[in-house]
Each structure stands twice: as structure tokens, then as C-alpha cells.
Length: 266
Image (tube, rainbow, N blue to C red; front, side, top):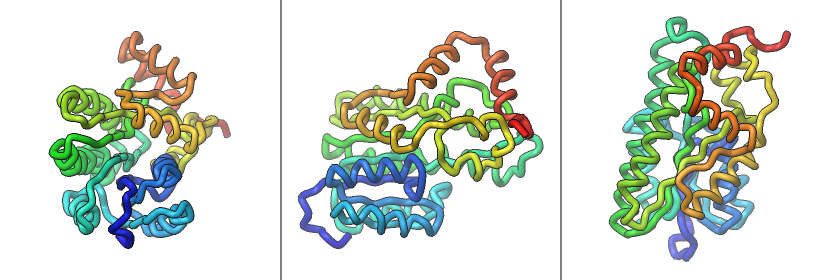
């Protein structure tokens, strides 16, 4: 990174080319944090150029975060200047619509590898450095989808259930370490997620969604405050509360109505 003498903190944000991840990076840039941002697409370079307008140093890494090698590539860039990471916002995620038996298994596996394997590997790498220093903040992007069986999004919802659970467990393990762990649990948000997951013809794909800038700000502030978890938006809070007392079979049936192919308005 160009400014190695900077006294600013360093933030690492994954899935930062667009959507919530980009907005999280923007929050950190506005606070004066230098950035290392990563995504598995070339648009991460343009995102970095935009974020430099806030007067901070920004390094873009185009890498496949579903692989150990891809995360290692990110870590090489993070460690290149010997700076400590103050904020880790592990936001990279992938979805996939349609019934599980109709999905290409390679695509389904990439959802698991991106949302779970790559995420927890990165958290372990940076988390160990934070624990050794006795300070740092970690924000994981979970989802209210993790509270319900995701019919026609079965793999995605299951990965978010994992992340939600993992974040609470890790927070407990690190509570005396000086490192905080927070989990942002958004609902449907206006990003490219639904297009990429082939969900545009579904009821949820065509529904009104939350603003990613608002969602990111809620999660970012919760992380700085050291909160364990935050559900963005009152409708999502209500949905999460209802999910906690509703039988799983009923939740699965309700989710099918939202995510079944061609369930959207014609």
C-alpha cells in the first residue's frame, strides 16, 4: 500500500465490488481507514478508484474467495506492508436459486465454499493476528435467511445459519481477548445478489428491498459499538422474531412461496 507511514487504521472488506460490501468499505473510508478490498471480479478495481476519493489508500485484490489459494492471495496483500488489521468485514457471499436437485453441484459447492470455507479461513488468519495484538473488530455478514429453512434456496440459507451460529460462538471465545465479533443479519437488500442467484422471477426477487447503504451503516455502527448481532430494518426484526417461534416445516413452506421459480408477479 502506498502510504506505509500512515497513522490511520486498516480495514479489510470482502465482497466489496458492489452492494453491502462496497457500502461497508465506504463507511470505513469515510472514517479515515485505509482499505484492502477484495472480490472475485474485475469491478473491484473500479470500486477501489471510487473509494480513493475519500482520501485514503485503497488496495484492490481480484481473487476467488471460495478457495484457500484465493484467500491466501488476499492475505499476501494484507501482510505486504506489515500493517495490522483493525477492522475485518467478511462480507463475501454467494446465493443460488431453484430446487437443490435441479442445481449444478459445482455451483452449489461454490456457495458453500464462498460463504463458509473461505470466510472462516480468512477470519482465522486475521483473527489470530488481532488476538495476538489484543485488539480488533470483526463483522460477519450473516442473514435473517439463516433463521429459516430456505426452500428453493436451501444451500444459501443453510450457509447463513452456519455464519450466524459461528459468529456467536467466536464472540464468546474471544470475549476476554480485546477482539469483538459482530454479525450483520440483513433481509432482502437491493443488490445484484438476486440476479446472480437466478432469482429474478421469484416473489422475493421482485419484492421491495432495503437500501444497501442503510444496511451497511447499521452493521458498521454495530461493529464499532461491539454489538454481538444486529438485524437491519424493523420488518426484518419482526420476521426474525416470528421465525424463532414458528415450526421449521411451516417456515420452509412459507419460504417456498417467496423463492419458488416463477413465483413472482408476471
